[in-house]
Length: 298
Image (cartoon, rainbow, N blue to C red):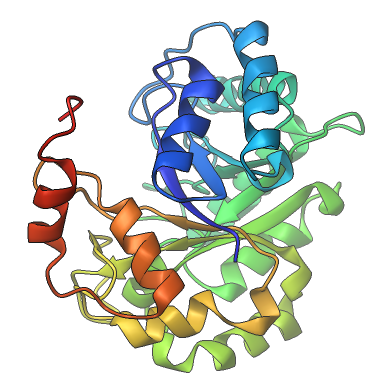
């Protein structure tokens, strides 16, 4: 299984991210090239990038499975303020240039919020923005994330994702990132995940799925809330998430944990242990305390 979590990029950039991932027992990871809440970015250190590639090669992480995530505040759906829309396009272009320097193949983006616009106009704005971002020389693939439907979020069902993809010119450079919490909160029953995959395959094609965010949900199905929970500690449930993780149709797709920290500790090492053993740990908080109590970083 290709399994990891989101990790920090702040210390030693890609090299630091890879080392954190290995400490969690992961063989992939996802990172933001800066804070997810803003667009402040530092120059990529190519020496650290070279070290990172060597480190990953020696520790079983395939660079082709590593994922970047764009910041949340980018909005490609609303074009009421042309300058803001153009800034989002420019930023994603620059972010793609940065991850190209690092040899990263995928960048996940939230499609955006329609705000006061009607849905169809917003969906076409997203496609137009992506058409402005991509050209024939673009190497990384943009992955549109499935959204929960909070507020005026776009990309909340197969129909909306298909509508966006239909209006993108360079279709081979755009894929999908499924998020189990978002799917649940948008109204998809994860207990019937194979049925959802069949619908997705018929409408768009499963070959478009290049990443899966694995999260439980704090809310019931169809709540449109988007609040992640730890694996097995939410309304989706451990067994349903295990079935997603081990689904043979998605065997070669990287799975990324975005679950919340438990107290002051990252849960990813123990959650990855749960996933690999297929055994739910009902004592996650206590076991994390024991795991990290002598770690000088906590």
